[in-house]
Image 1 (cartoon, rainbow, N blue to C red):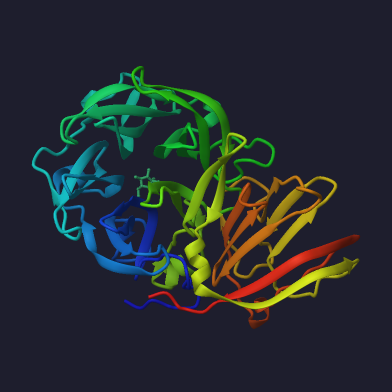
Image 2: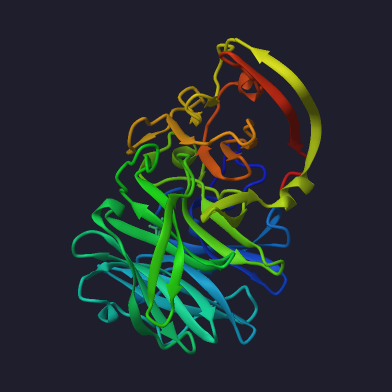
Length: 446
Ligand code: FRU
């Protein structure tokens, strides 16, 4: 098979060929970052899902490793679905969902060399029979395993008979024998028809639950994609197995951001990575005829500010770009757009709306989503009368970090013209560029 290079990213993680979706098993293990991912190595469609695997020392340069798991058992014949990893007795354990027929179950595989994985004889280690009575067995998936006070816990999602999402909590002493503990969080009908890919962790003294929701109803500028990532912050009572939610917020306001998963590294950083793409879209470019589809966002460090998550791009990325030019104290007055293909990032001072518009970005991207389909926006108040933006542009993606990661917008774009490689600043009224620096990636990732 051929992989057409046109839109291949330069500094984001991608599979060598074929389809990828969710990041899986993201872990810092024996001095290296490991990333697994939902993978169809045969073509650029979401079928025959395997676990792809790569590792890295800096989260920027990745070494591709052999496929970790294939759908080769009765219980995972229709896909080795999403999951996570955990180190135990020096070995790497992965926990994933076996998808087969109308049933989803949770399974374990173990590696001694961090390359080859053996599915254990006890699989499935959590069966649909353990589900609470309100759960539908065909939607029970995405185990995220964590360790607390020498006990293992796993959170999974399940769909209720009322078509809402819920997060289930199980516990174990050895990662093999699991006991159902509680429904950690019950979704309402205003929170989507199903949840996916839960991740739970402690951060700055609080508990955080990130999950991906299907068909969240639109609220103002939030949840305009068919699938959205939500971050809940609060406190978990691990004895009772319940979560007291204090805040809830959409994690990224762009068009292509889903299935977020995190790790904790040796520097104590909680780092998130997400699938930079979206279900229910039809891409006329990469997916259909370029031999590949899907990529990950930049890894982002998570912190709390005012009880909400903020995201900072990993500083390692700066070792890979060169400063090209800077600009300071430049006043801009009423200007015009050059009439070319363009991706527009705009800010309206009276409403504090920061928007990303890809209507004229290049090849149109279509598919099911809530209007407006070409634009996403989010409120970003000025800080000391200033707006700060960090913009990462790659061949077919854009990621915006506003006011130190208070808000982010992530999207795919497919420019077609040579003239798309410029940058233009235009204002209606007057604005001052306080400071601007422009850098270029130097080192094509391996
Ligand atoms: C989320 C998801 C998961 C599932 C996987 C299948 O994008 O639907 O819930 O495990 O993708 O590839």
